[in-house]
Length: 217
Ligand code: URA
Image 1 (tube, protein in one colour):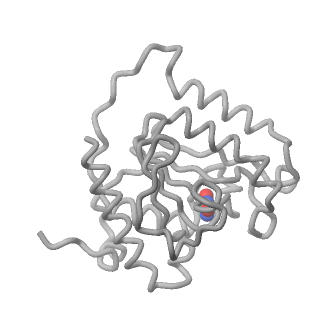
Image 2 (cartoon, protein in one colour):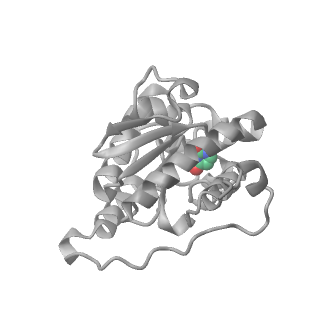
Image 3 (cartoon, helix red, strand yellow):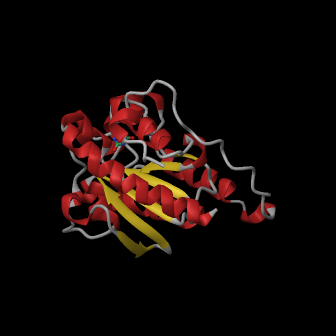
């Protein structure tokens, strides 16, 4: 069958999402990741480990299926995310939704998080000490959700989770094993908004992600 192509899919109005998988029977209450995630969310809400919390409206913890087999990790909240308290809800988020739908993922099926949980002022890159302060939260999210696939969206997530010298243009499209998961880096949706030539490589990466995800079912 001819592969749908991201260029076409991104202009479609009707998303090609697959239905969410049937509910997985909840494990014993004391082990439920959603409970531990809720506790971690409260910790993040009360966090004052770095200066970002002072300028942010609120923390943006992340959202999605607490038992997701796949997590998408971005950089940090922008203005819309800061206002709404949810990750990837602005222009880049709308494009991420289209990318997910094109690859057959329902947003509720996956988990979406960021490296930093507070919006850096004027959307600047988070500083190293801010990343270091916030990273333990992301690592704990990974430990609780235990995804089989981690998709790093953009340079910051790639460098923080894979290798601090990694360049997305070099490492994208290849699988790495880390955090008991397969890790794939690809361009950040915001980069696609600036440079349409990045759509094709992102779609190539997403096809690999989709195929491996399907093999897990
Ligand atoms: N960009 C990100 O990296 N994360 C968001 O949540 C929104 C935009």
